[in-house]
Length: 432
Ligand code: HMG
Image 1 (cartoon, rainbow, N blue to C red):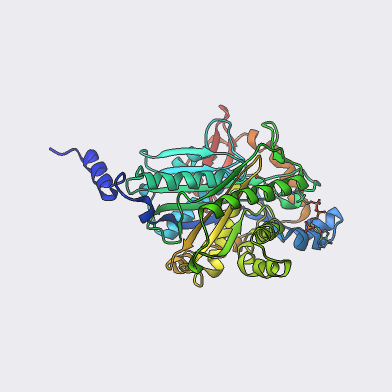
Image 2 (tube, rainbow, N blue to C red):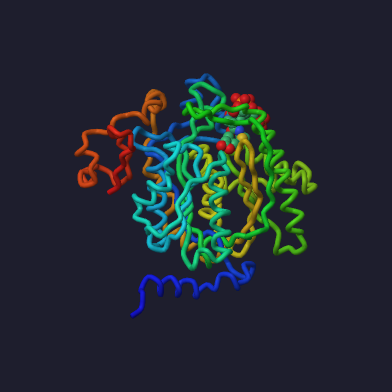
């Protein structure tokens, strides 16, 4: 008599012959992507009017026009679930295919229990699945993605896919210099062999790390602290270091190897412009050539981020999604660069090639739908939400029967929802 569990595992292992395969000959990368944002956003012009600065400082000076603001029933867990559900439904993939689930976040909801465990339960992922959370400021999502690539390249995946979700709510104190660079959102990515969006280059990254105090958030604080202008310098130094290693590993010998676009971590759009200028300088371009290169090679990646703000771990991947949404067709087969930066600090420069199937898949998934469903908040509504969210982690959940899974069906909207905590201080969620 055969053991069905054992034979399924053996056949999955034999399909990919993990240890004998040459990883460089295999295609590994991002198969599908989706993002989620809260229902509310604040127009930066409205913030500027109250703070007494010209709107142009935020809109052109920083390159942000709107920032997403989370409501009392939205948190990094609900955003992660929302993005992951859109991903699986839109890409026609089943939770049963997932063997690794990593959540990158720097705004975790618990010092011990990872968001990945909530996500695992709320999505109904298989119990035979490795599940954990990664943290290194905005670099946490990239740490998860690189881990997934190595998991597949090593053969540990045995034909399964990885779900990587970057989710965060970026908060600075009201009326601080960082305030216009807040945001909230999640990006979910399915990472697999033979991906349909981007083939990523495994083992060819340039890395840079240093111990710096550019941005931090002590355990007792909800709002981040930052040495703003120093953080810009740290980002640029990290870019120089990571790019230098990447160039040494990737000598640009052939026109087909040229990076035709580059996506950067986007705390605000102007930072990506500064980053590209630094790279052009390293490559020996003059200022006029660098400006032209920015318009062609970077600007399309900043269109979605400019409507959402900084989403920390997901910011680089929202930029990639923006690029693919606007230009995947013309970029088929072309090589793009990716730069991830996390304060503290850690950075990585890596690259990939856009797949010919990417444009059709993304347009079928209608990836920008979340932006069409948002409501514009007035300044007083924004201020009330920001003041109230200090209490959100300790808010008692509504009556127990409201929080019960069956009662969730009565909710007016089809979104995952955070209720508050129960008497044992456990967070209560519902997903329809
Ligand atoms: P600030 O000091 O208020 O702004 O805050 P500023 O005076 O530097 O002005 C900003 C830009 O607006 C300047 O452009 C001005 O010239 C321009 P630049 O010189 O830089 O090209 N400007 C105008 N433009 C048009 N019309 C006008 C006008 N007035 C001025 N009227 C700062 C800026 C970035 C410091 C602040 O927003 C901040 O502290 N933000 C948070 C920190 C941050 O985002 N750092 C980025 C690098 S670190 C990072 O990316 C990691 C991070 O994501 C966290 C993580 O890893 O977890 C933050």
